[in-house]
Length: 271
Image 1 (cartoon, helix red, strand yellow):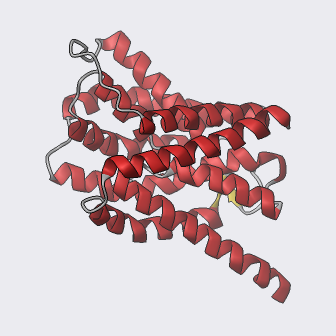
Image 2 (image 1 turned 120 degrees about the vertical axis):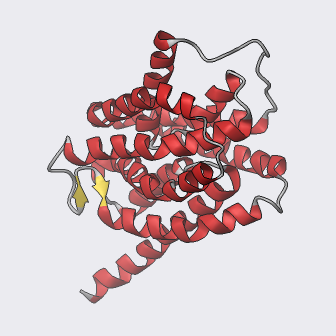
């Protein structure tokens, strides 16, 4: 028992640190934290030998469960500030939710190497976005029902596959259609809770029984530790966002994501 405690305590502290970092960056950059949580959990599980062949799926599922709660405070703040575009929220949310739930139901059946390649490519995309100052063409507007449903379902699939709340998909998409960045970020925060919850529920209940110590594919211990750390750090990140130059921070984070992406792609293609 004492040996188990000696092993578990450092792992628990690492999980809390993952939560602190994801909450801090989430508060500073307006992201849900999944781009931090997923690769960190994969590395931690590989190092400790947890979850075997389901390492990647458990990391994605656990990330989504964490994001439900870590995104909630940001969503409440944005709603109170009156920055959410409710017309866009109503148009897109249902399709994002369906896409995220579909991913949670189907992704566990993919080979782990394939899933890692998908996540690596997504992180590569996010890293490039962080490092560039891309501007949309001024004539673009949100598409009609068919276009919006396709955008929403596709974005939800990506969110549920990569273990994110959708902010890294929703914000660039809305900016692409010339929604002001502050409204895009606020609307993404409001939608993120439902998107993450849909994916997490699919991973939790569509595949019972899951690995030992988990509800479905959600690692309960990791979920609790990371969520507590992220909730504690997120308000600090929000305050720091007003003091640290956002563009410089995005560039540093973008470089970090490219490094993580390279590792994910390497393990995906060589495993």
